[in-house]
Image (tube, rainbow, N blue to C red; front, top):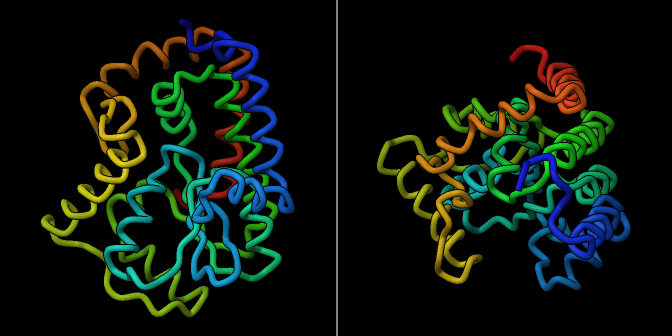
Length: 241
């Protein structure tokens, strides 16, 4: 299938639209998480830190790095939508949002989920418009910083929210431990079999799939225009990157 084709099956597409509406709502996202028996998705009472971001933006890596350092804290993460962000902002819950350069993030998501590209691009725009509205209530960290200098991330969280965080993993052996935590979480969520296109660490299979998807974006005026909107939003939120 082409990356611009509809999501396979009208039922699946309708299901995603319904879920998107629920998860984008500050008031429905919590009940959605409970209905899915995944309370860790939403910052309910007692949450110490919400970690959010567009998919494929180092969300899993940073979450497990924080768990490596501070396993006693209660985290919420991985709904990838506006509902938890709006709620955390209103309830003044500490919040870390990850952002990645849109071309890389969107291509990575399309490869991982076999989603059509316009859906992925519009998702990026919708998500980071919400982040822009709540910018003063959160710490925003770029993908490149999150994956290369966790000390900056931890210092920003300490300075903004007064969180008492122990040191981040920095040694190669410690980073390897965190990566193994990421792989294990993928194993658990997939029932033991991890597709190299879906695992939350770099793989050759993902690198090999990138050129075809990028060519499709470059060959479509509509997709290229959507990507420009994503890039404008990215540079608005990360002016120093």
